[in-house]
Image (cartoon, rainbow, N blue to C red; front, side, top):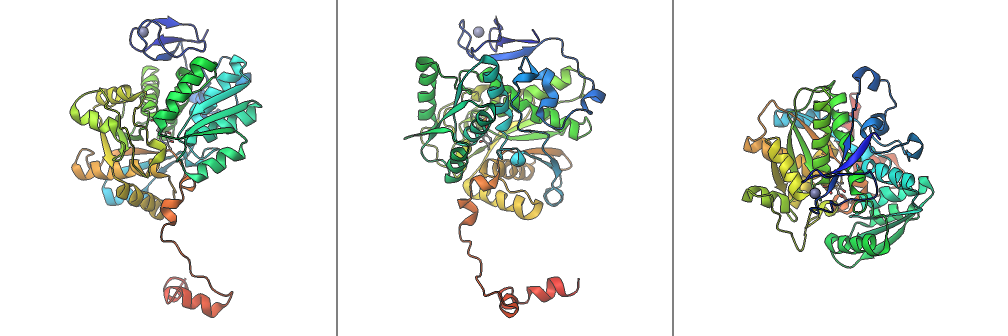
Length: 409
Ligand SMILES: Cc1ncc(COP(=O)(O)O)c(C=O)c1O
Ligand SMILES: [Zn+2]
């Protein structure tokens, strides 16, 4: 066996089966790998997707892999924002994954694991992105997908999920209400809810973001990595990824991790500033960043521990700052992010202004979802001039700009 499960708190070992919680202390279980050896030179020759890290993913046989080509997404230097902030800002652009969010990483692992377990159906509870991703992977695997979401997620996300022919159940209430229902479906109906029932495997997929950043910076590590937080699993998983590469001798330092949340649902930021890892749940999240509106985060205290361990911090941005950051990213760097992506850039800007991120630092921002999945925010007030297909009308519509911008070139 290449890997086993282990309790995060009391270290009790478990066989790698469909089990997520320690029966002694009820803490979550993690995957632990045995005798992993990876050579940089060999790695660099492999296919450019997340499955290049097979030795560090919890799948026993390569035959079980459900591969949509996820990962090895671009790490773009944000030249203009870097210049205005006085830092070297990189964008880890997960908006271009197969279903347009980073969730293809954990869903890819979880659905592959379900195939390995012989499941005929998978389920998930989701604010929309995971649902689309699980649905797409289930289609590719030829199994059924049941997705449970809060009723109020963006229309675009329902469209995407419907296209993959998943069974959608929209719950009246918040993500936490949907989550409680999904936990009951796992417990009482025996469903494989991938982010509950097989969570130890599911969370492993996201650490490939850390591996890729190391490779894409020629085995250097940025000073800071800024990560949007909902359940907290993504941040913790990225921390694990950097630690695993460090322990394998592939990198020589660790980045400081920053957790970014929307002010309308920021239980981790609030706990961090209270100086505790005990989370006070937010009962009624209220933010445009719906995909990260989780009031009672399952991995919250572990995300805060990761931040503390790396001498990082947690910070929030309000809706206005998030929308501003989305527009900045799109208009200056050509990357169209959904609010969860905007929040990392907004928080980075704030932390540079506060001096927490020192000028001259290198910073990688995780842009985890595509703006096309949350269109309303950007379309507000958008009304293009409608003209006849006539050159004079065209000139009038752009009034003067034509001469200035085009005539001399
Ligand atoms: C686009 C996006 N970014 C970030 C996150 C946060 O992930 P986590 O719940 O692992 O903290 C989510 C969660 O749904 C998401 O959809
Ligand atoms: Zn335990």
